Length: 285
Image (cartoon, rainbow, N blue to C red):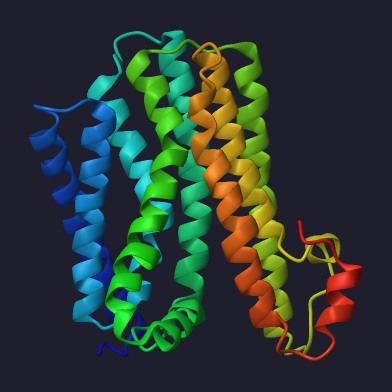
């Protein structure tokens, strides 16, 4: 086990570089036969399998944690580089670059927050520890399909609308800027919530945070994560003339938070005294 924080970070970076190249190779291989949507999904799964293998090597499922934020900008950047014509500043190129800007901003915020909290391979997300304890001999199955593959598919569905905009050469529409602005503001508020939570934890105060955005919501980061992908999805739908199937990702993402992430977090918090009063006085989202 690598106990040094910076050595562990360097190893994870190398793992993700390998996963990116593995995904690119898989995309080129499958794209000769399948549509870009299927090829991209298979490439995404290939990269996930690479990360999963290293999570087994280090006996730590948290090797996967950055994948949520690294996957979308890499996919979108590769798509823009492959598809877009940079010889002239067209409406489709402007829209593609705006979508990438907000996705990259979101990814930077989330990855930076992960890196700030990352300690070493001695640390593993409490949810993974809980799943290991509850699943027993089935943990290998739960680890791959629940911890790794399911989130990969959710984020794939979330970024697919923006990828479709790029591939279809959709042209910028006035309403696009409204929804992109919603996504951009959601990321800003996520960052504010991060700073407030870090300050609360560093203060050593026990109990529950009742200041800033956390006074209005028990899960402001989750609320903003939901808004982020609805903004991307709606901007893409508007640009593509109302293809509502592209909102599948935002919908699945919302359901995941409502029925999986938030209940797990609340159950974890319920161990603290006074949780029921806190729950009654503070909105979920």
